[in-house]
Length: 177
Image (cartoon, rainbow, N blue to C red; front, side, top):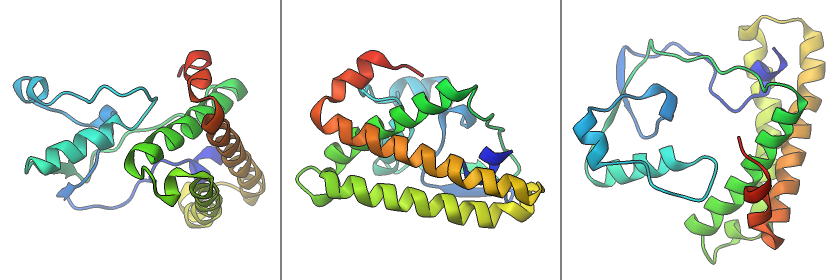
């Protein structure tokens, strides 16, 4: 329940029955077979991010993503401490991977961008915990545990991302999720 307070997936909200949205997650989208074969997920050397890349490609081609506001999925918490750590390491790798591709030569592709992402991640932990606390319906003790758990996750992401500036492929060779 602590992860429901801080985790990076959006909490369930009241949304219209049908609306358009710029992005999507692979586990809750459907394509017609012919369309998907003509517009596959991009092949990238990363853990996550292909959904956003495909959404951008489709948007550039003029396609809209329609979302059912009543359709929601459930994301379980990490399966133990090792999974929690590996997810954070993978996120750090992906942060560095995508920032160097999307912001090549800019500040966000350098360690200052890493520090900025860390600060934003920590702020999101605090903001999400406060915003989600009334909706998740847990005791205040969960908040006291959730914040250090969320901030520790952000520290691991930071360490992984900084490590990637020196040896990015070491993480891809060692960890899988």
